[in-house]
Image (tube, rainbow, N blue to C red; front, side, top):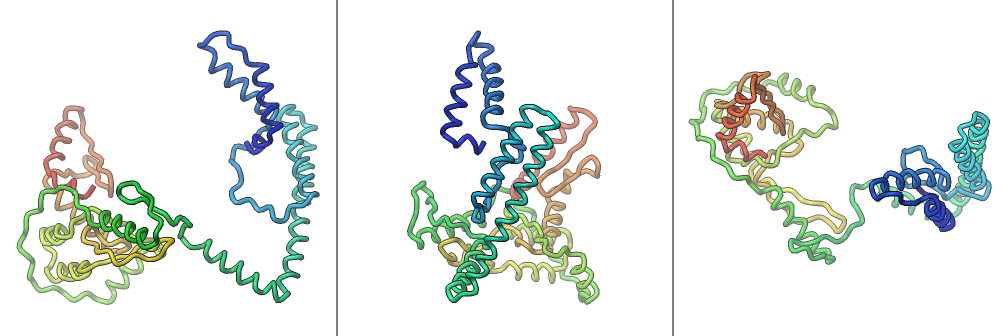
Length: 331
């Protein structure tokens, strides 16, 4: 509670607790202590709404009138919490209205002074400073300029920090899980019908604006081509997808600058509308020998729901799913 920062209230709180607290037995110590602390806390510190303290609370416009009105409102709230009387409730609501009015008047008064100041030559410079500060506040960068290396030592040099970020993401984006390779299938070299404009328009219209497509960071690239061929995907489309992933790189933007390029050799592309479809295709190939029809088996991005009629059947089904060990490469 914010009132707990007041040193006088701290002493008063401690004194009341020690006066009321007496240990009859070790078994009742905790229950009795908790009850007394709660009672004394409500009496000395008051009671909050339970929503937590305000975040980044503005106080630049506070003045003596606002402080008096806010204190009166808090006192009335505390009084009403202790008594529960309708009369105290009405007094609290009236004090709440008065404090809201005082805050509004103080804001208008301070803003008038700010506007007058901004009309001066010095004020014009302040406008640019305010705009720059707000622009920086809107960016997704923190002010943390140090990171730890692999041994836990803190790095402060900007080049060392950027190198560490590059090392971290290079490992994250290129690490493969142990797996068994999917059997290579013969490529489909048949004639492929040209994609029509109406098909592209339909696919684009079904995409959600502002929604990045979910991708998965543990799919080895070579398994993508193998699974596409296993489902009979024309080799023309396999080559197109391979071209999309060839020499893929990324960069990391941090508070100390942008890293050098990081090669991305594992995972499906983040934000690509094709990635969910490729993941479904891969899972279809990897689980075709053990998968049952719904509702006995339902698969999601990071979950698999299995249903059986008995515990024994479920145990056998789980053993069946342990056989295709190459599925673990995705998780």
